[in-house]
Length: 115
Image (tube, rainbow, N blue to C red; front, side, top):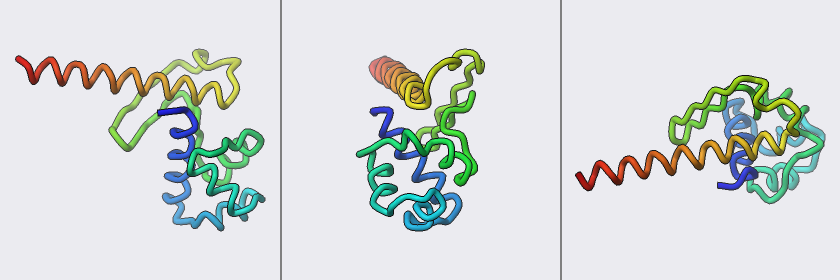
């Protein structure tokens, strides 16, 4: 999964938890409806709107703890592990951690099914 896919999922999930439509999120952030649609489809990244998105959605996309409700994956890193990285770079780190963890789980699962 690409970092933009994780970010797209995070934006949509946070919006839905607030019970907002895409149009309502667009109004809160000050962008066009189509912009929110492209973010949620992973077709574009809200580089200049990350801070306001986190504020209006009452969430952090790159906090020291990442929780992915799709598969129950949780990872905790010390805050300094992400120091000096841009928001997009942090999303790339989380995507890599997630992909590696899921691959490891699949490998273990496969090994145990053969035994």
